[in-house]
Length: 398
Image (cartoon, helix red, strand yellow):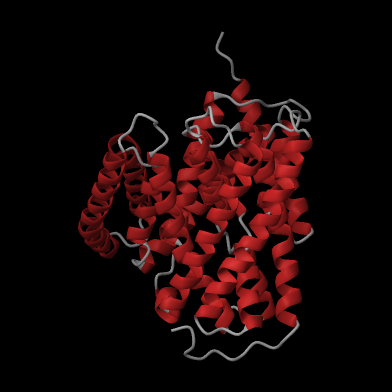
């Protein structure tokens, strides 16, 4: 007899993630924190009510593809024009420092000369730390009335470039996951992929622009956009050996400047993702987080990774800001604003697990980093930015 247990599992996940998400919201935290905790509670570490199944894995994979498509769609390329070189410098140094810090942290705790993938695993730990999710920062700055200030604009611009740099690094390192692969072939494949994306962007940007004029606010436009996202995700993984989320992100990036289409499609996808796919993705990360095997070494590593996660962004982005003419207080504010990792780090970690570069014992540490950085970022930002009045917006950061 065919089992219909998966229907009950879906209901349990949706109800528990929503309940704990609402509780998180009541204490001024994003719902993702509640969804993660729901997954941990339901998983083998606590209640053991839900375990990983093929259905959950595939559903969460759809969720993560949709999230990255939305991240691309939500990218405001016009923000880059406001801050110019400053955003790039802040993002670049803010990616390099966590990448180095995470790599060193992993090697200090888990260096294994018998593991052919040891250095790649260490590098991927650094990649997880490069991620930035500024949604919390944006809300905090909006609440303080400083979103359109000098610091706010710099953070928004740097966050866009941070995502793009993170995707490129993820693409390169994932390409080396197969130990038999020839390095030259990896770079050739990545180069061909970006040529392919450029051609697709040239053709489909204009095609979707035309369709937006003909079918403005028609549901078929949302369906075509989602299909476009999945096709690029499939081609990326199948023919270039590049993470499907990379293809999904660039699909969103290609469409992000078609403003009417962007808003309509994002609205439709957000509803579907919010109601079904996102809760299952975040719960699946929690379910994957097994706390039973945590020992003193893992706990110490988790704490060290958390400290590095916070300091590396504050120092890296802060140094970038100082190099671009921001004063010490503004540089500190920008660094603090880039600390939160949120869903981006979870997405990167899941892709690392899929290619064998993130081991199971890493998930508790990564989830801890995500939750704590999400909790402390708005608190630290308010303390830092309220300690001194921000300068008015001017042409600095050029």
